[in-house]
Length: 84
Image (cartoon, rainbow, N blue to C red; front, side):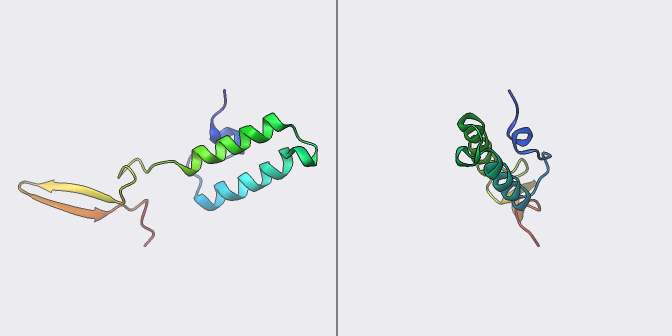
């Protein structure tokens, strides 16, 4: 069984734009109306859906990283989620 990244031909650190472009290329290649198989096209769709629902490993998809310093709690924007 291959990972969603392998199905789309991507590295695990691919950006959202790269994922979208790879999905479109693979969908055009494997679409049943263009001579591809329906099983391969379904695998491409499932891989794209899995990568769309991925969660940031640093903040858990919340967008902020919580740090504690004694009694005080501070929230800082996640550097992977917030493009500054």
